[in-house]
Image (cartoon, rainbow over all chains, first blue to last red):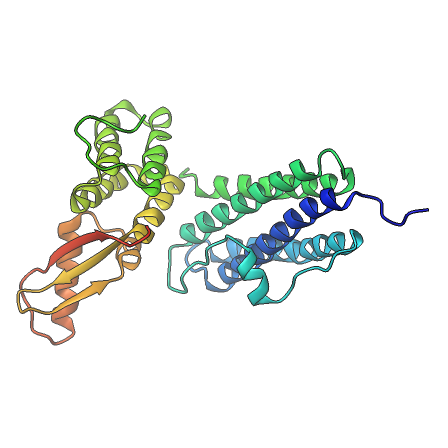
Length: 156
Length: 142
């Protein structure tokens, strides 16, 4: 009985995309943590807490993603430098900025992660429904985060 | 779609991206703002006078950013990563300025930026009292 459940070619495409999603999610976690520390202004308390909830959720998520790579019998990338090289997320400059800038930046970072997840979902669509399921759940989480942050930016 | 007989230069990717962001504002803004938005879109695509692009961007931002923060944040990011600003004073002093930091202060116009830089120069003890000239250029690979 073979212990290999997926053809190698299909696994590599899925794993390649999983690595990108992991790197982008890790970068987003870092940017969210930065926003949690440096946000200032009248909305400080609500944003400080909201960002903490987001990066806490992301901390669990990156673990799940890395362990999915391992479950596919590939090594997971890790470490700040390695993951930064794999991610396309741009870091925010360390400078005073309006609270809305932190929110807008995180919306853009979440959008980058969603794009990576959509690519993962497509790569996994005909060969790996379990990974596809992971991608779908993550997309829902990030879309919810984007909705909440867009709502914050509205001028009401 | 974005070329015109009067254009000799094909717009860079960031210029097209900026024009698309401006286009997204038409369905969600009052038509009284459309002339200004059309000017801004055209300015981005022509890319011939970056100072005029900045001035038009700041004018639209003043009117619309409060209601549409995210599009103007995206435009600000594109401008900051694609253009650089050189500031020269009549005394001959010249330096590159952080365009991102200047735009974060929400200036009303280029004149406002120039006056703000003059004030900083004066406060630093350099004694400059004349407004600097601002020169914008594209970053390589931007």
